Length: 98
Image (cartoon, rainbow, N blue to C red; front, side):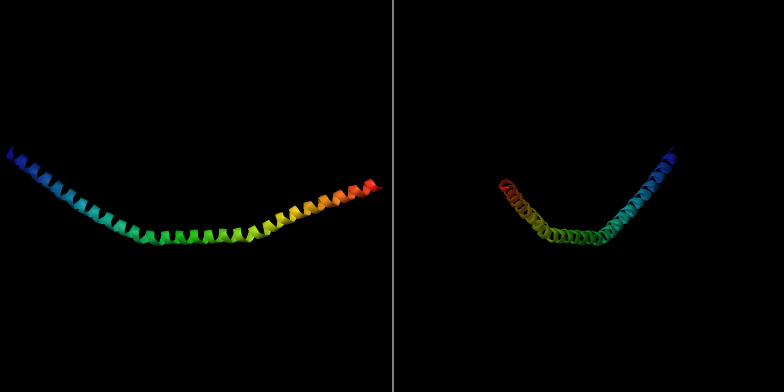
């Protein structure tokens, strides 16, 4: 009976040593993974920031490029409709005189 107990203690101790070794290995793998992730993530985030800045600059350029001409078009449309109203009114006045 004592022999079986001794064998069980030895087997449990061996399992504990193996489990501890696996735990240490897992911690080292996790640590190296986190270090790699940290080193690889910085350039990716920097690239994303650069892309966002470029997109923002492009949107500002498009906004500035289009706002002036579109404003001019709408201003011209307003003036041209005013001129057309005057011409129509003058045309009606001529017809009434005849």
